[in-house]
Length: 610
Image (cartoon, rainbow, N blue to C red):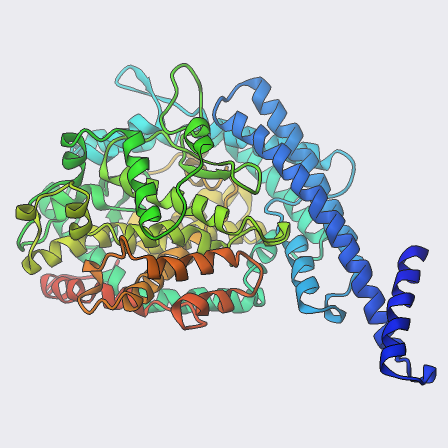
């Protein structure tokens, strides 16, 4: 401790003692030491937050420039900025070890824990390691973003390949495109393994046995308890997934026959209308229930009404504004990448950005006018509105209560995109409003996205945790990936995979190093938020028909939750909005209960499971 701080501490304590007691010999040495430690910790944290804020602003601009214009120059600039940002974060995290969190007030202890555990890919502090790690991560991101493969004599991008997967019903073509995209990822494997080794070295230096344990430490509970919590939540919703899998397999078998999709066992992954089989709504035409059909197709309505990508974003903004939140700043519209720019290589994976920890929020999307991107726009804007809400918090608290909160916010709003809401904004007419006899159809569409996704989310980080812990070696990366996909999702590839395959790398969040547990948690929590909001609004109908559009009372409580950021343990924040301190899957079960009954009836006589 500096002499200046010691003097300040002594003066403060002296004044306190003069006011409180005339007896100098009653001074508690432990209390004095604790006060001195708190003062020194606050000084350190003030400096750390100031340095991190400045560095984050600089690095964010470099990362944005690279993501929206991938060139050797922007790759180099992003790698250099990333190396300096990582070096600073690791240096401060190591410096924080001088302070014992057990001896500090809760607010200081919380900030230190965030500082130590909040680095996604930590570099070792030895010379050159941060630069090496940053180059690896930048190269991996660029390899994914610029990935192309040949199909029918033409080089195609992921966007084009995904459209084929979503719309084609030719199993030969589906397999060719599915396998084609996975030719972009084998070159990533060695860099990915090298990155894992370096990041684990960095995690161990910060006091964690491996990077997976560091990631799992960010949930206000020990990692082992968090893993158990995830399993508890999955156990709640797994029966619904198994019924959906059984029903979908039956429909695919009826469509394609035994030679393509057998009536028993796992489902062929390329038949599910999504490049990663994580959401299945694109094959709704195949699995459509034998019930009253919907009288509209949202994609068709968006096109017919003249929606553009910008108008879709404006519609999403209008929903948040209807809850009483402020419109997006002018700079959002000037600086966002809403469509794929001509003549540039860009990272099209949709994302939301906060470049200055204040008001420079943006989205990056290659938006197309369809129902999927209509929902995605609301998802990304949820991040931006969260970022704006907590902008007054201290730097280390400028984040979600945990990462699942951040992902859940926009999707929670998306659950209010009901037929009634679509009628209110003029996308469908009163005559097209579905009656109660169409509820099964509505719920099926939602389940194909929301329920199908849950085991995929478990698989991505389940695989990655085993890689980071050392349980899965590089030579077993691909086999371990498909072992988990079979176990959790009941899926198999359309044919044998090559010996050099690195199929995990064909999913952005692996080379992009985005932890994926957040998405599983968000798909649980968004239904919790939805149920709580509908109760606040006085809704007494089925949950899937409830929309909070225009409800400013709910909006006030919603914004209060957002403003807390990461300033308190997440159960406190959850309770603030929902009245409960525990993540819970019961709201999903209630939401889809009518569909569960339908699925069980349809699956009678089927051999479910795989």
